[in-house]
Structure formats: structure tokens, C-alpha cells
Length: 170
View (spheres, rainbow, N blue to C red):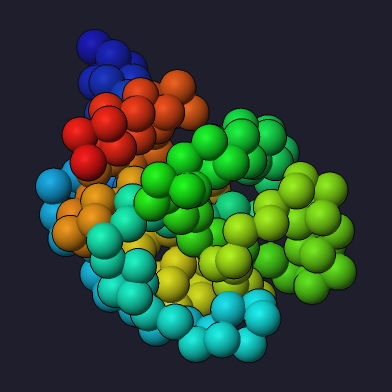
């Protein structure tokens, strides 16, 4: 009987720890909330605020050159950017990196030719990663022209459908 009690206790403890880790890894913001504004310096030296992009649909993308799923996602984002950019869609990439050369090589190899790129070299301790509670990547936020988050971590086909619907009604 005492053995069962200990086993049950370990199972419950494991579930509590798993839930705590799950909650810790969740982005701070959810669909329907206003995306927090921030100011950052792009890799081209220009200082921008997220609010400078009001009036456009923005995919805020946290990624890394060392992240296999991020690189796979990039292959799907490039055609979406090409398809919807002229209709008011921007991608704002925030790279979580440890080395500039790897980031530059990944941008070149993946064809990430949009304007809005910034890099945080503090891994997940950079100001934007902390502000958005980013602990794993890829993490994305689709933001509408009014600055509200429409979706978090959308699959590419979901993102495409949301953009088609939203941009068709403009």
C-alpha cells in the first residue's frame, strides 16, 4: 500500500512539474491581445518600432539559424511573403543567435530578403525574447493592422488562409 502511495505521489509531482514547464514556455501574449510595442535596431542600422508597421499585417517571427524547425518554416514563409507583401504583409524576424556569421549565412541560404531583421545575441535573454516570454523557437505572432494579435504559432497553411481572408476584405 505504501509503495502505491509513493508511485502516485511521483506521478502527481511529475504532472505538476510538466504543467509548470508547459506554462513557463508559453508566449506571454495570446490572440486578441494588443501586441506590445518595442523599439529595436535592424541589422541595416535603422531604428524601428513595431508600431511603425501599423496599417499592415505583420508576422513577428522568433527564429534561429541553428534551429532546424525554424529553417524548415522559413522555406514556407518566403513564398507567403512574396505572395502577400504587395497587399500589406510584412515579416519582422527576430533571430536568437550566438554568432553573426551563422545568421547571415542562414538569411542568404533561406532567401529571407524582407527588410525587418534584428538579432539578439543573448540567446533567450535578449530584451525582445524576454518581453514576449520566448523560451523556444520557432515562435510566431500574426498581428493585424490595428496592432492586435490574430494568432500565435500558426501553421503555414493556417497563416496563408488567415491572410487570404483578411486581405480579401480590404
